Length: 404
Image 1 (cartoon, rainbow, N blue to C red):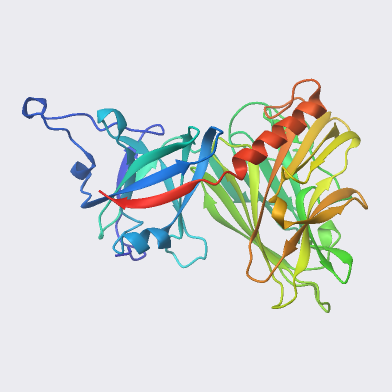
Image 2 (cartoon, helix red, strand yellow):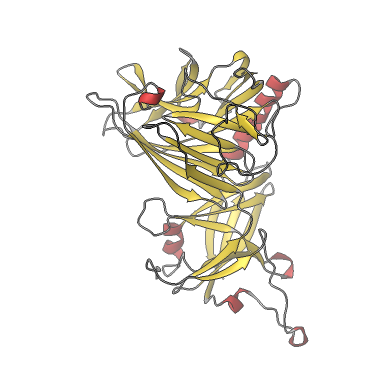
């Protein structure tokens, strides 16, 4: 059963990111478990890391539809996930998100550190009816619409480690000096050094780090509004503002009067992670595969590494005046690579698109003075960092649901 809009919600405040349910009735040898919170049913979630690399703070996304295929009466408004290891119950903070605006949840997000070649077992407790919400006091991700000049299309998404800004189709990165969320601050002077950091990729001339182009008839057309040199309508919507994922949907309309398609893109940042994830659903017509490009702005004095097999492009060089050295990287799926276009002010990683197929890339911004950075020799170590991140981001994590 799904809670209707306006129904009351039972709320339990949990301070911090975990809570242990204390043993009770020790004389009787009993332990107070999640059932004491009113949950009626339980199933097991297995998260498997089959690879040889440890995955720290790995985002795990559970499809609500997939859960209901296993447990048809699962209620995403009345559930909680626990780690039951060590004889106790520790809350695993999760976030349920509505991606299509129908006021029903589509995905549940959690984060786990997964050892190599391991299987992590979690327990999901739920009740088919009612509503129950475990609140946490320390959000680690955020997203919001940003203000700007009339006609501009702006939005931001962040984790405590990094932040990104969408400006009319261009994507810029914020460098942070220490962990924390900044999007609720006054960012009017973000191109100048603030106490928290600054915009490290401000300016015009390219689509920044993660801005998109589409190829039609051999020509690259920017997915951008007039403010970034394009001529199409763009809509943006905040779908989630934490505590674990900040998520913005951007809808690029097709270019007026041409065959150039648009796209719908989900830009997201996850708690305790440094990347922006882009899920790109191209607006291509049936039987007409094309290519979409992910831009990486060129830097003065840069050193570039491009590895087709390992699926990354990295660059380390000088940013705008007053910024200092910056690092940029994009991670992609090698089988989707269609080439690299180096013409103009940005390198563009071209990806083959087909109708109904979602393309996924990840972008990372570093700063020589900031929290996310590289030690000397910076360019080589930034490339090594991007290569390691590519292994983590493309790891084939498996999720299974099992009975109690």
